[in-house]
Image 1 (cartoon, rainbow, N blue to C red):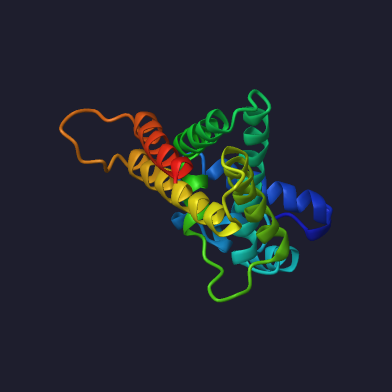
Image 2 (cartoon, rainbow, N blue to C red):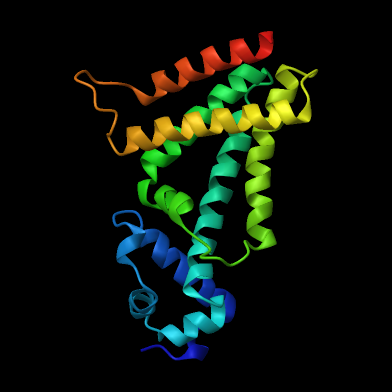
Length: 199
């Protein structure tokens, strides 16, 4: 068992988060526990509580790193085009691809619960940054829309893309013929955006 002073606090944070991310490449987070993570890195559970505050916050750091990675990929994808519809399509497909490639980390993002605790500002800022991307693109697409219209449209699109992604990743579209999640997303965006812009 490693002693607390074998690693600095920063090293222990990185060791822990990297270990959990490696685990989530092949296993769902439901099979993890504070005790299991501590054993994997050679520390006792109380050390992780001292460093992170709680198991819940430890998992939230994993969520934060996944969102940071998604945000970085989104920035790269958006740098390739300035046309709002193309950008929205790129974001939606990126979301689907990220979920397919990082199934268990993506699952944790949306199943993690604060269990009544307030979401820390550092995480809330990340979420606002991601939703802000959608809102900015919709404002470019239709500058005369009100803030309320833009926010509502962004959530409709996000909910639709998220639903398609969820059903695609879990293979729950229940069709007799193969259905491509990317094509469903294109269908959603095309239909919704043409109606939204014209009204």
